[in-house]
Length: 153
Ligand SMILES: Cc1cc2nc3c(=O)[nH]c(=O)nc-3n(C[C@H](O)[C@H](O)[C@H](O)COP(=O)(O)O)c2cc1C
Image 1 (cartoon, rainbow, N blue to C red):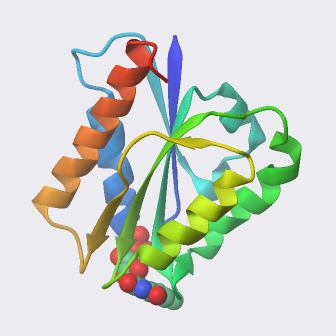
Image 2 (image 1 turned 90 degrees about the vertical axis):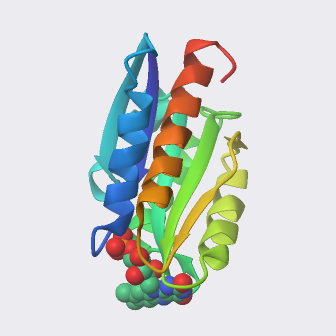
């Protein structure tokens, strides 16, 4: 059984809705043998990373950065994960008011230190969420799960 970890931080619910859409897509009935774990960053830790075969990280952009809650997850897991998760596949989804690029760059810079491997195009939802954003998140979840099932990740 392969495992996809969806870990996110949210304050007003947008990133959570995206995370749920990623998880929904990954639980597509045509994909077998992939377990999906949906975790708030504050509740997630090293054990979740070590169990995962791929990870989807979701964060709002706050002050041009990833959110404090998401950064806290990386602050807590960075040293203990050294040497244990190299090359783990990941993807990113971001909710932003009008930008999102700062959060993406900051997150990428952090995970280069683990180091993880970005395997899908990031999703940035700007200016609130619409059906198109959530559809893209579902597609991302499905693609990650299908990749795990196929042994690509
Ligand atoms: C403290 C704070 C700082 C923010 N800074 C940015 C920013 O730098 N760039 C941006 O595009 N949006 C910014 N926003 C808007 C949020 O990214 C946006 O509302 C997002 O959808 C929130 O996601 P959430 O509902 O998952 O908390 C900020 C919001 C807050 C509360």
